Length: 176
Image 1 (cartoon, rainbow, N blue to C red):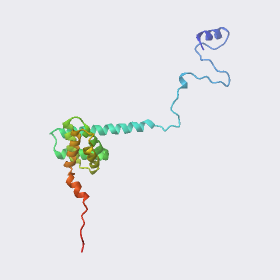
Image 2: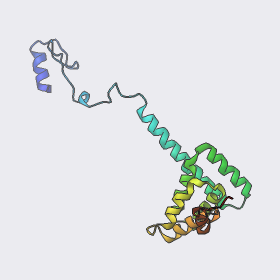
Image 3: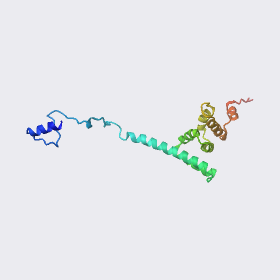
Image 4: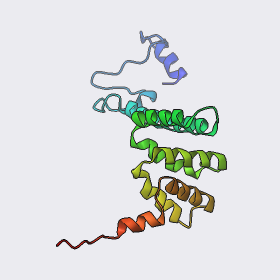
């Protein structure tokens, strides 16, 4: 309702003041423009975005822990035993996702960081990292430096072409 219309109604004896919104006639509902927006339905699960936030926060903590481990591995202040202890604490906290994140960290541009990741993977010696490292080292689309790092991590864990061939050979023995 425009200002002129309100003034005319007020002048014609309508008792409503200008500051009050117009009252709808019986059975009609007035809807303001702002209240016409869609809102989240009341039937939606409460805290639906909190779960997504918790997942993002745990991923952020995992990446932060991996970055911290890489920094620790790069510094010469800690012994191998101390690094291994920190690595095992991180595995206890994050589970198999830590090994997966370490494998992904081989894609870093910095050579020193990649070298630290190779060393961490060697210390971890997790068999779950072997298939992704083998795929990475054999993938020609992956840059050569990263393939080499994946191969070094495999070699550090004792996974070489010879050990793979030895596992594939079936040893048959005659029993008499």
